[in-house]
Length: 537
Image (cartoon, rainbow, N blue to C red):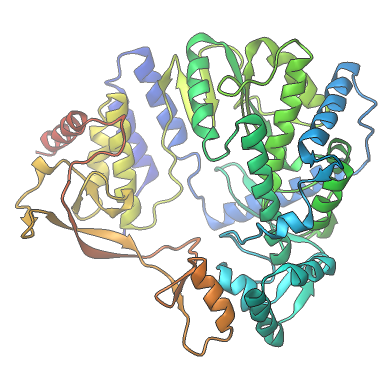
């Protein structure tokens, strides 16, 4: 059993920080100390309090949004921006001579799929379980009618088998829960009905493709771009990085209805959950258009903010420029010249700026998990819990690489962690939880196979699976799962959200010292580890 004490690790980091002599190094250690346990899982009693507080806060915010608003009775400048954003959205979301919506039930269902998370009323989270071996849940039976008429012959056969044992269940909406955000609060998230989510993820793909075509914004790459922009802003102060509080829950349904073409609104309104079941509050009618957990919330939010930012800049003789401006959900970057006015616009339409994570002055910028001071990466390390040996290995390796990237010694912290668990050396490019990552020159009596590859032992997560037998209850569904890559070797992988277990296995590598992180050098690792060994002697 791991005996880990957060205060002891913090003391060790404080000792290491005493040797920081430059302003930048001291700043980096201050950030490290402030982030190290910012997301550390607290006791169950504390988590229960945070959970209840998050749900109560959600219901209160939703209630405050209940009153309908007129989006034409605003500050004249803001109203002009919204009117132009509405026109732009009509142009990009409607196509052809007849203004056909690119988002329809027919276009969505062709791209429909399942995500890795939970669905309301479904026991497992895998594709086969959600679609073929459980009840289908939906907020509107019209979705099921459309679904039946749109799927392929093989899929229809799988659905027929499913329907013989299970039902189609109409539910009032999503189910609200919360997950830890940091030690002070939880983040709310909704579990959507399974059929709604299938359609929502189809809409997500269409919206993401639209962002790529019209705005050269690829949501899979935008976090990296935002980090580069934040780094540049920390050097010359040219841009502002803006972060919003509860942005996904702040899109008033009336505002979305005002901005979107009626054809698009009607489809998204049909596939979203209009109610949420909240513990101790019952079924709550949503005043916000969609919550986190809804499959299309994030790309829709990114699109709406991008269009509003573009029209805001055009009103000032500028325009949205990829690789200068960045929008990723509620992480927004724009020229500092316009930041004050844009923040005013956001507040006018119902959003709250997170002052702790928004930066318009000075030489610090933060966006998409990148923290920069005068152009230097100052991102700290966030521990979410230490419950097993593998968590110690992970913490050791992350601190080791943090020290090497920043050119700082963290010998005392590493020494403390190294003494808590068995010494298990692993290659540099192994998973953080596998063991201690060390340069090959520090290996004692390494073993090699006949090809010269180094043999070692490492921890790997125990895979949770469900077997698909020859008499599977839905063979057509199992076949579709196999064709989609969800079934391999007659096994369906099951998602593990907590309580991950590990086993130690034998592995081989031909390149022990390969470093996948370009910011980490072999020489830096050697110096850091040599310092650790000398302190241990």
